[in-house]
Amino acid sequence: MILDRFKLTDRVAVVTGAGRGIGQAIALAYAEAGADVVCAARTVEQIEDTAARVRALGRRALAVPTDVLDEAQLERLVRTALDELGRIDVLVNNAGGSPPKAALETSTRELEAAFRFNVSTAFALTRIAVPRMVETAGEGSVINISSVAGREISPGFAAYGTAKAALSFLTRELAQDFAPRVRVNAIAVGSTVTEALASVLTPEIEKTMVELTPMGRLGSVEDVAACALYLASPAASYVTGEIYGVNGGLTSLNMRMPRAFD
Image 1: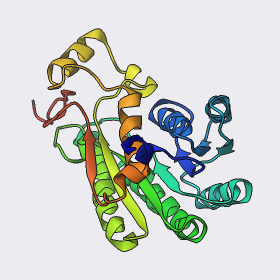
Image 2: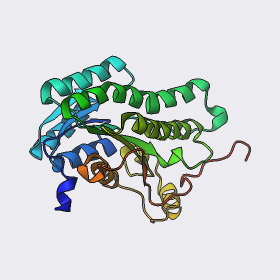
Image 3: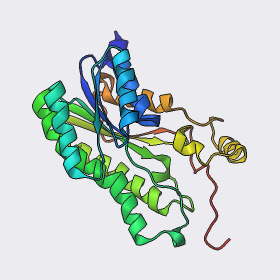
């Protein structure tokens, strides 16, 4: 049956930023589809909560405290996954982010930090994990969580938008490097209701964002998780090097930011 192709029975997924929001939703979706999940993030209590929810779905779970900016911790994350669960089939590079900020107020150091957090960390973990993925599972899937800000331009997103654009291009490059054994795809996420967005969301800002979104609503973490499940599953076995938009049809950003000389 076609629905069987969306199952991840007995596969092992590593998800960064899995303590809350999109990362947690992806971890739970994978567990529902039959996968065991390695939950990585800096906040121990959050990943332990996600791991407990995975176990409640009948799957194995590990909570591995990880700062993705520390490559030694990325090495430990992969080693722990292999030691405890024996294989890696799926890697989701979800950890990342950077707040919008006017270009003239953004320092070179902040630009470099955004690039490191959103691009370099994903590259480092992928480079560590992919050889072991092929060694233990024979094939695999890498999914990078990018952003609509990486392909649509707007004032205020010089650092974050550029970093996510680089992550999307890196996705396409690595798909060529790793084919046909490991597929590499990304999701260009739009405005999604998470704690991070809620911290800046006023009723007025939300109203404007909804009005500027063709689908007439903000996204949910489950919207993103559904796409991540597809990309991880055998249903997407002929898909690599793609950047899937889960953003309500945005062709421009729906958060209005001032220009430098308004």
